[in-house]
Amino acid sequence: MSDAIYKNRTILVVDDEERMARFIRLNLEQDGFHVVEAHRGMQAIEAVRVDMPDVVVLDVMMPDLDGFEVLKIIRETSSVPVIMLTAKGEEEDRVRGLELGADDYVTKPFSPRELVSRVRAVIRRSDSAGLTTREVIDVDGRLRIDFGRREVWVDGELVKLRPTEYRLLYHLVQNAGWVMTYDQLLTKVWGYEYRDEPHYVRLYINYLRQKLEKDPADPQYILTERGVGYRFVDYLRKTG
Image (tube, rainbow, N blue to C red; front, side, top):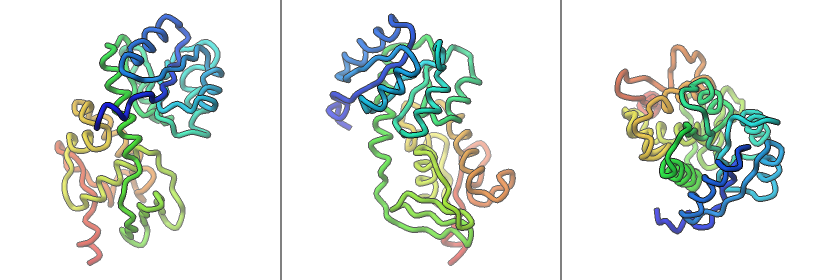
């Protein structure tokens, strides 16, 4: 994608340390982004409503509402991509943020180029989220996927998927019957910058199984190819 797609995109930076917020803002502005700062949780929530940012960079540690509480409130009304800033080694924070709907995290301390790269990656993913196929797929009598409407139905009930879960399911289903490696899934769903982070795939496969499978411990749709990746059941051969 051309660098022009990033020019003047609005990034909301939320950090109670004003010096850190300024440091992030200056580096993002050098790449052509328009940056808005917020230094408190409620200020950030209001900025999401008023400024309608393309990405939110959200620190976990804040004095009034912490980053997790802010993220929960944002997710009630907005699917804006959110990158969490977490302390080094706080894996629980990273997992909790992803479970609450964060799109990514960056561990402090970080290089400016790493953060800019992650911001660019979530913008690319967000821009490509409107996947083009309008196909309706009846996997079996239980699971129906309507890519045109971005709807997934299980046992006649509409299941709500997060944007990342939807993209992951899309690529698995479009390659049904074929093994997709960790690298392939990371590149297609998250971006090439994430090829060394297979835990993203494992975590989101687990989310999908919890929502789609009758028994997530014994999956019938999303099958594990141990040490390689995952394969969506070949529903055409199964039903054909």
